[in-house]
Amino acid sequence: MSFINDSFMINNTPGVKLYCDIARTLPIIDFHCHLDAKEIYENKTFDHITRLWLAGDHYKWRAMRANGISEDFITGDASAEDKFRAWAETVEACFGNPLYHWTHLELKFYFGIDETLNRNNWREIMTRCNRQLSGADFTPRGLISRSNVEVICTTDSPLDSLEYHRLLRDDDSFPVKVLPTFRPDDVFENDPQRFGQFIEKLSAMTGQAIVSLTDFSQAIEQRIDWFHDSGCRISDHGPLAIGFRDAAPGEAERLFARKRAGEALSSTEQEVLTSALFLMLARHYKARKWAMQIHFGAIRNNNSRMLQAVGINSGFDSINDQTDLAANLNQFLDALAKRNELPKTILYNLNASYNDVVASTIANFQSAEEGVKSPIQFGSGWWFNDTRRGMENQLNTLADQGLLMNFIGMLTDSRSLISYTRHDYFRRILCNLIGGWVAHGEIPDDREILTRMIKNICHDNASHYFNF
Image (tube, rainbow, N blue to C red; front, side, top):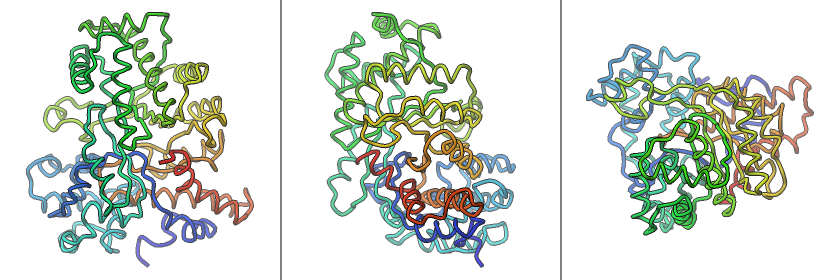
């Protein structure tokens, strides 16, 4: 029997049936990723498996560094062949790490390779992969179509022209929706000089003179409308921590004016302005029935020497901690709810020790007002938590504190075109969990309810929630 088989990751009979009969073939809605719309539109083939498999994958890069691999073979100038060999040697050390599973799911699904990769067979497997890359099945569009993807939501700056999203929208030969996501990181820039540079670019793009916070809101709204017209229905935010301080009347305008003039704000003043900006953005999202995603808790670029050498998004990030999360998160959501400006919201928590805090807070703000079940969502295990343990923790916490039946499920959060097997990984873990409840007599083996539950979590809830 091959390593990747029907019962891979599933240790009970009901779970295998749920996976094989229901979950495995459901379409994918990838509502958060970092794919490049230009790359999808241009649809060029890859000349080497290393370019497809290792380029930009900081998960693999972290593992290779831990395995004593020189940076030349990771982000450096070593040949594609040598980089592949270095990765194959690292795979052997990955028992217990999800990278071992992801690697072999990708080899099996996309390349039809059953053997496990190691230092002895790396050249043979590399050659077999490279032989297939010239086919239409291995272009970006071919890989996406083979993965049974319905919708892709990329991650895009407010200043992005969205040219390639619009070209893809008008291309009838490719039925997959490739939609932008509004990611306004620059709105929350602490440095007043960089903030001012963003304001000048925003002003030039919108033709809106930006002196006051009201001007700023109008200019941002113009960009939100451009995104909306391009198919966007989601925003995304990546704060280090969740903080909230409500502003006194006129305070946010005064702080914005000072920062706009190049003045540095104190940490307390910055938190007041950041809170006001978040409320402003959420109001715009609510008016357009968008969902607001918040991925919080990543402390980034911690190795300053390597940041200088290889740049951002290179695998030097960690899980953050914070104080007063429960109070800040409840106050933030309450400030929006009492103004009737709380949009559909998805909270992704990177520090698993806060799972119960997040899940219990979410339950305070559920309502039927948005026309969907559980409009405030506890997002899937994210980044350092998209492991078996991390996903099971998130699923169990959500089931404890809320309704797992209404969960909108998995996303890739990836830059790789062959990471869609992470959905398969999630589905196996989900079916094993629910099948285990059946096997242990904790829930009934009710085929109708179980079928609906699996279909909801893997596809239907996301389709209804986002209404693309």
